[in-house]
Length: 361
Image (cartoon, rainbow, N blue to C red; front, top):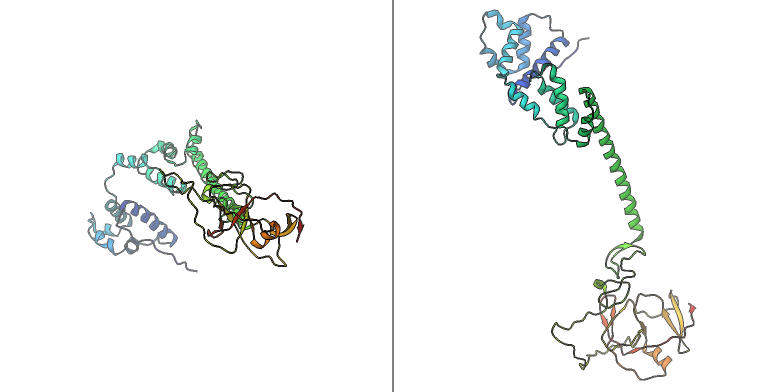
């Protein structure tokens, strides 16, 4: 069965024409052998050559001069003419300079680097020194410093050993990178899953997002109000708003606005200075309300909601009357701040010591 082979060419006359001719010459000779054209007469083989070279090379062929007319049909002589035309005068000094300054480029594999070194060495006429000089340039030109140190430690290093060592190092580096990428991706997935399960967003005490029960503000003292378990940037107590250079007037009377919902608040200490206390939620009790306790205040049972995050206890005026028998109320300067940042004005500040008897609702 006849074989169909792809002919080489055409010859590229741009760029490094000398290297282009070398590759074409080798490909053409292989083609003649594979297609069984080596026994054809000279005129046929020259025609095959010109066909493979392409139309751009026909004017070059026509410009050649021969000692005898029949030489234009001699394949070897025609190819020698093209070789002289494509290869300029050799400059051994420059070719060797190119070889000795060759370094492995970024993203260039070691195989690509050593192949180019061998090709450049082939035109430098190193003769018996060729393998040793290629080995030396490999050591000087590779990117990996650790591999270079390993090669320099060997006193009797051959070219083949240097090539095998560099290939093994490059392959192991590729494997390590692949393993690191897989491990990094796995850890990122585990981290994302953990954060999704336990992340607290916009914490009231530190202003950040963190895992449950790992607030960085826990155990810290606020530099603004000197209270614990929150940072100053999240402090809900009002900062000193007296302008620099002005003293606060102790006799100034506070302005009061009438509010009807909040009538009393319990605070741990009774101060004359103005203070802001945080109130997270005020609700009316229902029959099925969770987390509520009944507490005896002055031997009277009152229902409180447990652990709302508030810094004070809020008491309705009706409940205050129930446990105090309508004692006189005195105004104070403490203010309540809700979760939304709104201020609530109330009637009095009461300091009680509780006799607590608890029953869970």
